[in-house]
Image (tube, rainbow, N blue to C red; front, side, top):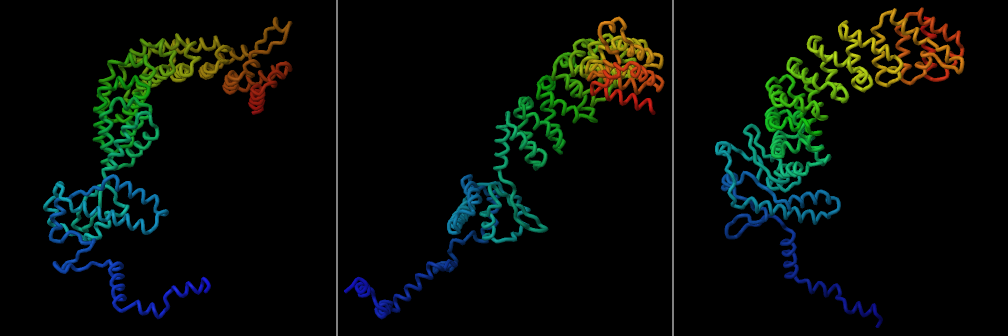
Length: 508
């Protein structure tokens, strides 16, 4: 007997199998399959009621349960499990997802059946409430991923429905953001976005949290932007007022801080058109203006006030600036404040300030913003001995000022104020050549030297535009007569442009 025959002798035949499967065994087998596969609700033989896993709260106790349970909160581990299921949805099998859903379903029901004391709902609304969905659908909505955390029941008589407010996890999230805001640019941007497009409740929570850490957070490198956003984008005036009142006693301290002064500038912008807020800011800072003028950060605040407030409110600042002129004239932002005052106020208010500006013209003309002070006096100041004196000083140092990057702007503005005889005097000086020096070596005229200079060529260009065609022809004749001068003028790119402009002006 081989191996295959031995196997066949041991296995039961078809006839033997039929004898083993008696009617009794077949009946037991079918009943077992029905018990394991049939998941429909069964009737309890004692109470004659359904008793399955979907047996929820009786309709008789439904209103009582709603009175005692206004809010239903899921614990954090369940929330994390929901989020985890979301991310791994494509990786987990259908059987594992069904098992987790059943566990969540059962857990929600247990929470619902707990007898924990919760605030009762309004009785009048409760008496008129009509539930449009059954309990089974209600629990299934709760276990769905769309609703996570704490839900609050709402009823609408016109169209009864059930929906849920954002959970308390959002409040915890915002609180943790503010706690971690210090020196964090990413969190600062998140909070700014919440202030700009968040709900009123979220904006209120942010303001409440910021109030507790003010004024320190306004001095933070990134925290100050969050506070600025409240006054810039928040639509709730009450929240802006709360934040303003919180900072009111710290205006001077913030004005001297490199980051706090930015918040102060935003406050000054916010106060435009609001007399009470402007007066409140001025009352806090007016006694400390001298200190702010000498502070590199406080200068920004003063300049913003000059830009935003009515000039009648800032007249008190003029005598203080006159006292501090020598310091402010050498300080970049101080020059801007002087220029702003001269630009805004009438001559009778700033006569002393103009005199000091002219007396210090050599310093102002060679600074980035100081030259604008002199330009404004030359362009807009009334004809006076002071203005005439300034023009004379500029012409006397024509060459030295023309080759300076900033002072060349002042020379251009002075040329615009000259009469024709004065322009002829300047022309004679430009075409002058020292014959004594010509015996030893070639020395170009002042015109050629300035025309080839990177800054002075703009002065020459302005001069050629201002003079008439007869004077332009005399310059061209001078160059043609002295070919060495002509070649020297064309030797640089700046000189070539001046030569082209001159030839074009003469032909016209």
